[in-house]
Image 1 (cartoon, protein in one colour):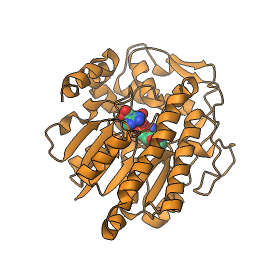
Image 2 (tube, rainbow, N blue to C red):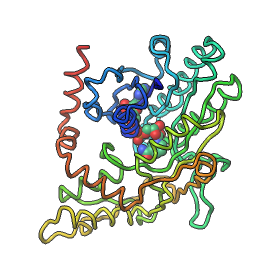
Image 3 (cartoon, rainbow, N blue to C red):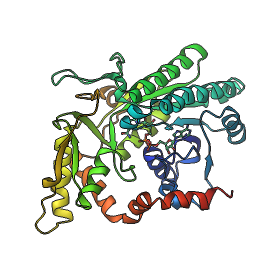
Image 4 (cartoon, helix red, strand yellow):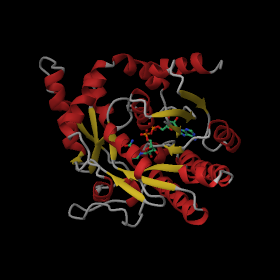
Amino acid sequence: MQKLLITGGAGFIGANFILQARMENWANIINLDKLTYASNLQNLAELEEDKNYHFIQGDIADLELVSNLLEQYHPDAIINFAAESHVDRSILNPLSFVETNVVGTFKLLETTRLYWEKLSSPQQEKFRFVHVSTDEVYGSLNPTDPAFREDTPYAPNSPYAASKASSDHFVRAYHHTYGLPTITTNCSNNYGPRQFPEKLIPLMILNALDGKTLPIYGDGQNVRDWLYVRDHCEAINLILREGKFGETYNIGGLNEQSNLAVVEKICTILDELVPKPGLSYSSLITFVKDRPGHDRRYAIDCGKLEKLLGWRPKETFESGLFKTIEWYVNNSNWVESIRSGAYTNWIKQNYEHR
Ligand code: NAD
């Protein structure tokens, strides 16, 4: 069975990936996470007794820590999910995005290179480094432009996108210069269970359930492609096993939606699932001042992944959105823990004494 060093595994996508790997028992996991505000170890609470799962609190930029982890565990692969990931926060505080996404990724690559160069040839050939990135590196599309392909030139517009673009370039350079066996994935917007409720879909679900307004930027016509998180995790697993070193793969949901359409769909499902007498959830929609530099449209052409590795998303937007809303409705303890700060206390109780 593969042994994977996952970075950022206490966040949304990383936690979903780890749960899948452990529940289906196809990889042993070492999870290195700094535990920023976006993390939640309760996502992984069911693995507490699992002997094939190890959690280490730490920074990908900590050269000594990462070097020791590599020497201790000898993972077959690293999957780098760790990042500052929220565009609005990158506009308010770009420095932390440079620190983790640019410098952190660079330091992780450098530590990995020093470790990898000391491995025997068969071990070197087995090893791989998968870097998880975003479609936002490609910039913004007009309504009739073709979707982003792997050879679309980078044109990042937000500090978040610029920091991820920079990290992608370092990953590319480490393959080109040192031969490090890297693969980069560029994925569209994810949604699904366990996403921190600052992102559009969980924010709207939870605001609606609370009877709060549903704030939509500008005219609501900004378009994103949406992918159910489980489909993303399956694509990463496939690329980990069958992807070619030095390549990049676009991953998308084949599902472009305007922000307004997304919120209206959430409202329609909630009207059915959690009806409130006299309330149509869509009456809570309000339009607010647009985000500065807000990209108009992202769309992903994931034909390469389909053609070469046979991947396609399984979930439709309707089925994925229904499952996501059901999860938030049925997991009020998780939601409350985020709101009350109890999960921060839980982390302290469970990890600070170890
Ligand atoms: P997230 O914000 O939910 O989680 C990020 C995790 O990284 C957190 O647990 C955080 O504590 C950890 N982290 C942050 N800085 C760290 C550091 N210096 N060292 C170690 N850990 C650190 O993010 P997510 O939505 O799960 O995204 C995961 C990855 O996927 C990111 O690289 C992101 O750019 C990329 N991505 C996300 C989406 C999306 O829609 N969420 C889409 C495409 C790509």
